[in-house]
Length: 230
Picture 1 (spheres, rainbow, N blue to C red):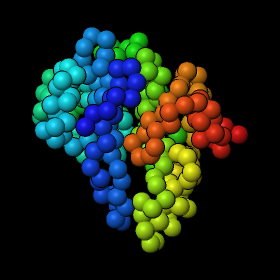
Picture 2: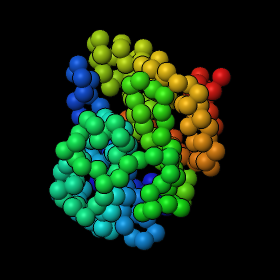
Picture 3: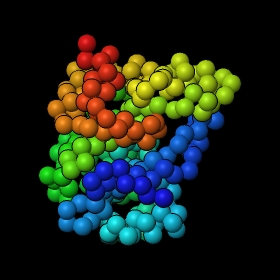
Picture 4: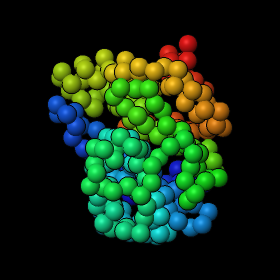
C-alpha cells in the first residue's frame, strides 16, 4: 500500500526481487503528486491491482522514471497500464532495453513536467552504476536508488551474509556499498555530483534498499560520502 512520506510524496514497498547469485532485495518506489495534479513515479515496483487503485487515486500518471540501469523490471507493465505517461531513462538504459522506447533522457536538468518541483543530478564516473538522484523540494526528501543501501543484519544467511557484510550492505546505517566505491573511475566527476546533492536542503533520505533516514539528512549524506569527498 502507498504510505505518505511527506508533503506530496508517497512510498510503496513492493515484493522482493531476486538478483544474481541468489541475492534477493526489497523493492521500493516513490510517487510524487506534482502541482499540476499529475503523478511522477520513480523506480516502479510490480503493479498490483491494489497499487494501481492507490496510484489512480492520487491522479493521472504523467511520468515514469527509471533512475539507473538496474531498476527497469516492471517498467513495461507500467507503460502498458499508463500509455499516456512519458518514460524518462538514462542513455545507458536505452541501450540495454531498447524495447522500452523512452520518451526522454535523464540528465542534470529536470524535464518541464517537474521543473521547479524536483531537482536532479546524475552521479557519473562509476564503472558499475550510473544513477540519477532526485530532490523533492516541498518535502525536503532526496531520492537514491542503489547508490546507498542498508539491509537488516539477518536479511541474508550463510555465505551471502558474509559477502553482504564485507560489501557494507549490512552496515549500521545506509552507506555506499564497497563494490560501488571501488568502481568509481572518475572521482572528480562523482565529487561534483555529490557536491550538488549536498547543496540541497535535504531533510530526509529515501533509497530503494534500506531504512529511510528521517532526520538530519544533510549530516547523514556527509557521513555517507565522506570517503569520496576526502
